[in-house]
Structure formats: structure tokens, C-alpha cells
Image 1: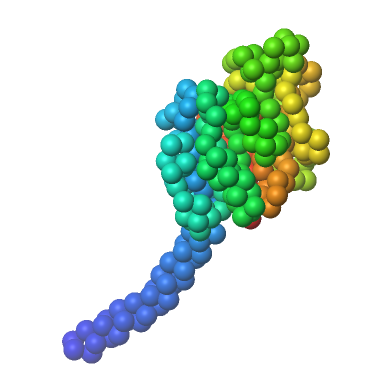
Image 2: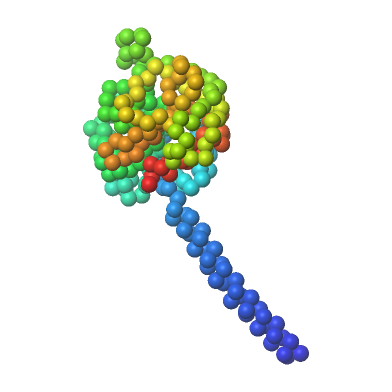
Length: 252
């Protein structure tokens, strides 16, 4: 009887010794995946959008770890804190009513000098109508009527437009795994597009601007994506993959 108990105890010890290394390996693998996540600062505010759906999307992006802050918080953050804590910044913010401070303008430029990746969504294209370098960083500009006396130069927008989106560059990291897809959201037309930007997504609709593009500004990779207003976009699997790919790409 004692031998039986002894054998059972020995078997239990052997099982424990077998599972402990396996558990340690699993923990190490999970830790490795977490360390490989792209750390992203999400800056939003200044314009209405489907807020809960956007935040839910950000928190569910594959391979992306986010901290969500309002635009005012971003402006108060120290440059070194941003550089040390984040690989990339996702902007869904807008300011078209007053001139940004010198410090905020310097922060954007200094972040590009530091090589922090940037992804801009939707109405960021119409922000800062009088700050030219901001639009050079993004790679384009949506012209507001109030600041554009000549009507023919004013940009256009199309609410709740269903668009068949075409992958223009199938070999780029931002479009990896993406096929042509259909998306309903707000789209733009008649915009300024900086020379040399690389178009990633387009459509057959001549009234619409390119859907997404990328460029490098100073030392930063930059991606701009026109859609990004409604839950119809934020819940679209192809759109979510596009944003995750873009953040991973600019964050490397």
C-alpha cells in the first residue's frame, strides 16, 4: 500500500516537472507577443464622430496596444514622454477655428524629426487651414469654404457614400492581406495632394480623392486614410486591418 502511494506521488511529481517548463514556455511566448505589439497614442477630439465604435475598434486592433487621449492632453504631453512610450500616433482630431500655439506646431515637427510614426484619419485633412507645414506632414489638404474664396477650389465631401475601394499597391506593407473591398462612410474630393505621396488605395469614382496614401516626412513614416467617421467604417474588417497595418508599418 505504501509503495502504491509512493508511486502515485512520484508520478504526480513527474507530471508537475513536465508541465512547469511548458507553462514557462507559454508565458515567455505570450510575453514575446506583447513586447512585439505596436504601442500607439490615439489622439482624438474637435469634431463629432461615432465615438464608442472608434474606441472599440482601436482597442481591438490586432498587434496594437493603445492609449486614448484627447487633443488637449496630447498638447500637454512632453515630447520625450511620447517618444519613449509610443511607436506611433493615430490622429482623429481637428482644429479649424484657431491658430495652434508655437509649442504645438514644434511638437508635430519634432515628432517627425524623432521618427515617430503617424497615421491620420478622415477630418484631420481639414484641420489647421492656415498651417501649411501640417498639411505637408499629412501629404494633403481639404479646402474649407471659409478659407477658400474661389469656389472651384473648395473641397467636396460625400456623406454615407458606398464606395468600391481598390488596392492600388498590393505589395505595400499597409495593404498586406487586403483585397478590394466595399465601404460606406464619408469620402472627400477636390483636395490638394502633395507631390510624391504614394497612393495605396483608390477607387473608380472620379469625384473622389485617393482613399489612402503614404509618404515620409523628415524621419517619420506617415499614412493618411480618408474614411474614419462612422461605425460603418470602424466595424468593417477590411478597414480595421488597414488601420492596424498602417500603425504597424509607421511604428517600425
